[in-house]
Image (cartoon, rainbow, N blue to C red; front, side, top):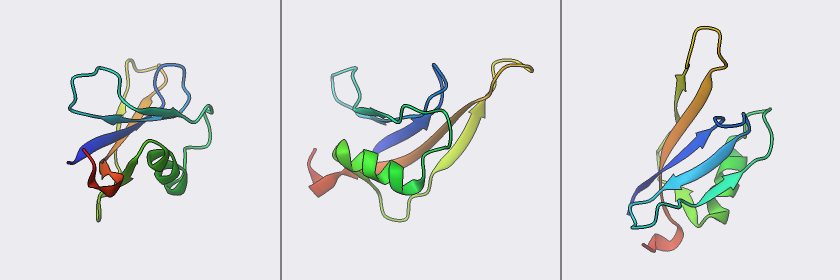
Length: 90
């Protein structure tokens, strides 16, 4: 079962990764990096996903987008990648 993992610096400006699941719960598994800089590395992201029980799908790449709320406001970054449960569990 593929899901989407998202890395964001929104809310208070610190990085957080979470997995968008299709379950009934509105609480998605998440991991805060508790820092604004630097952007978490690929390995740090993979390690955080593993802690949450997920891994990046083979050949998937992180896709980045920015969401400015105004010309002079801080830009919020969002990256996403396809993930799957480790071991294929649902």
